[in-house]
Structure formats: C-alpha cells, structure tokens
Length: 591
Image (cartoon, rainbow, N blue to C red; front, side):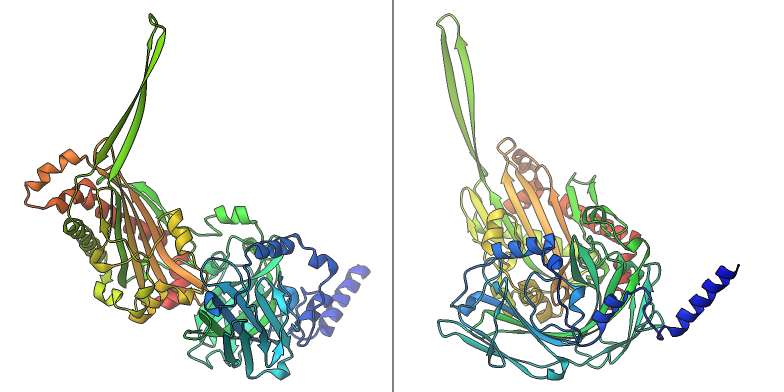
C-alpha cells in the first residue's frame, strides 16, 4: 500500500515538473532536433541504410551527361524557409547547411527530352558563391534563418548559356494548435476523426497554397508526403479519410512523426536559355505528433491491396449492349477527383488509327507412304479492308467525335468548342497525327485534333519527356481555357482476316487539373474492346441511306461503344459514392 502511494506521488511530481505542452512521447534526444538552429549529424549506420544506398544507385543510373545547351534542361529551383528537422527525412543527396528552422536553396536538373537527371557542364552559383554538386543532378545550400532574404541563383554552361533567377522568401505562417492541443503538446492522431489545424498567418497570402505533409516509411527511409492541400486559410480541416488516401499512400505511416504545414507559391519561367524553369518558394511550420490506430504501419504490398488503406473505385464489367468489354481504372482519391467535378471540359485529342491489311501464312503437310515422300505446301493469304477515300475516313472520325460529345452532354458534362481547344497556345505542343490513308493504314484526328495519350511502346519512348506537371500540355490547356478537365480518346482498329471487320480497342483518359504543383491529376481511364461485326454485314446498312463511314461505324459497334461509356460513367459514380473518401477529400475544392 505504501509503495502504491509512493508511485502515485512520484507521478504527480513528474507531471508538475514537466513543462507545459511538452511532448511526453518524445525522448530527450528526439525532442532536441526540433529546436531551431539544431544541426543534425547522421550516424554511420544512417548513411548505410539499404534503401538510401539503393536510391542513390538508382538515381545514378538515371543521370545523363551534363549539358552545354541549357535548352535541353528542365530546371527546378526552390527557396524553402523554416526547414523541418533534417533527422525527420532521408535524402540520397547531400544537404550542406541544413538546420532546424533554417532556410535552404535547392536546384534539380532534369532532362527536358527523355528521362532522368542531368546537369550543366558549367557552374551553379548562389549569391556569387559556387555550389558543389549534391548528387543526382541536384545542388543544395542551407543557411541560418537570420540570413533569410533575397537570394540570387546563377546557372551557366560551357556554350555561354546563362540564366539568373532571383528568389524571395514567402510569407510566414505558424501552427497554433492541432485538434485543440497547442503546438508543443501531446498531439495524437488515430484516423478516427477529422483533424483541425489552427494557424496564425495562414491567410496572409491569398495567392498561395497550403500543404499539410506527414512523414511516411519507404522501407528504411523516411519520406515526406502530402496529406492534404488547402487554400490559404487559418483553419484547415483534414478529412479522416485523408490518412488512408494520400500521396504515396501504399507506404506506411510511422508512429512518432512530424506534421508540417507549408505555404507554397510557384511559377513557370519560359523564354530563357533554359528549356523551362519551375521556381517555388515555401515556408513551413511543424510539430511532432504521435500516430496511433490502424492508420499506422502495414507494408507496401498489404497497403496497396487494401481497399481500406488505398481506396480504389475501379470496376470491370461486360455490358449487355454490344458486348463491349470495359476496364475502368480509377485510382487513389488523392490524385483522382470524383467525376462530379467534371462539368466543363474540352476534348483535346480524338484520334483513329487502323491497320487495314493482314497476311496469313499456313503450311500443310502430305505424306505419300507408297512413294515414301513428304510434300509441304505453303499458302499465303492477303486481305485488305475495302479502300475508302480520305474524305470518308475523315467523316467517320468526325462522326465518332460528335457521338462521343453527345454522350458526354447526356451525362451532364459540357464540352467546349473543339476550335477553342486547338487554338490555345499550348496546343502546339501536342503530338501530330500522320493524317494519312493508304491501302494498309489510316490515321486521322477529328476536326484537326492531335494525339495526347500514348497507346503503344513506340509512342511512349518517342514522347517521353521529364518536366514539371505545370508544364504538361494538358494542364496548360486546362488553365488557359479555365476548364475542369480534358479528355483524350484513341481508337485503334485492327483488320480481322477471318471476318474482314475492324476490331476496335478504345482508350479514353480524362485528365483533371493538377492536384498540386508537383503532381498531375486524372479523373479516370477506360479501355474498351470487342469483336467487330463482319464486313459482309455492312451492306445492309447502306440501305438506310448512310455512306461508307456509317458502315464502318456499324462494323465497330459505335452505338454499343457509347452506350458502354455511359454505363461506365455510372459505374464510376456508384463506386465513388460507395467510397466517401473521393467526395470528402475533394469537398472544399468542389464548392
């Protein structure tokens, strides 16, 4: 009894001597890294983390030869103020000068054409001082907060190319409380209820965006991931669903964590010696938190397959009408907004491509046992789809576009004029179509549209380009026309030597505006396929008064295709309704 009273007395005394709002779940050595000015010294074992080594090796494989022509570079420049503790993140590159609450300027060089990191073969300077390479096409220099202010970056190359970018710090903000607990107190999040963050100065710059980030575990690495984007405000309400559906959500959240709120402003810079520059400025405030409950842990495989931890509203079904096979791809709510947002869109690409010829070679063997001989006969059959004129194929493609546009209207989506889309400044970057008709091949774009989506390996290799989401062609068109999204359609036709029909494979992708400055968004992707009607059935459609283009439309079961599309849209809406995360995460941006 006496020992019990002593333990209670000791507990009361400990509480009395704890500073107000102290994070009791942090050890002393864990708490000190959050003090402004703290400089982290990674241990030898930290440098040997397997995933850090793998990341560095992988980055090295993606590194290209330094460039003398800076037009071949996509350059990212970031000025970050009030850095979170370095110990809370793992970098494969060097971060000299990083200190808690300090500032830092970073640069990353990407190949503008092709993939991976690159570099300049000249110098990178910050305020006139040459920076050393940090690895994998990056440069970084940190400095104390008392040196916060205008920073000047200069990049040169051996060819004489030169670009100078002036950076300014962004308006500060401060975390006041999380769920009513003041910053510095025991903030515990378990994912069972919405999280409310109160800020001071959050609304200081209405043109900026706020990002709530959380640290997750990628094997042995700590990775910063965006949990929830917000407009500039002093109160952020994070839906509880966000803790299971966020950037990189298959990766597990660690228990002792850092929650940060970062103000970001960014701009794209063109017409310099560099191909494109994305300039960003950021200011963060942060607090340790304890994460509990079923939102913690797991692994990449289990989280990826879990409908609870990584919501997915995709469906796969076979329609009765026309028997079109449909595969719907609808990913994580963080990057895939609900289709209800899609009110005003443009069709940026509507392309039909077709193989109109097939050759089939067969061999037959006959044995004459009396003569003791074997005779092999090779037979080659060549067939072509009936040759149609350029005008006929163009009429067919245009008719498909018109029918698709009508179906979008029927599901409540307005489609802006195709001329508005193709006349935007950004449309010049679209991939051209061959616009050709031969006896073996046809490729046509409806009403002058070009190609946006890749449909094959060759397209992917030819089109691939490393740049920033704000520099994507579809995003620039969306912004220039103030649209809710863009839709791209590619119809691939393949001549069937048995039926002489044209078996269709259709890919439809609906792009949303970017989720944030570093991540593109997408409403959905749909793939349709079916066995075409035989060519000999086309003749009876001519009696209806239509031309050859109408016969082709019937061969590919055009009406059934667009009926299947309407059913697929409804399937998506049903899936999104069954998973509240889609609407809850996007509610603020839908209003």
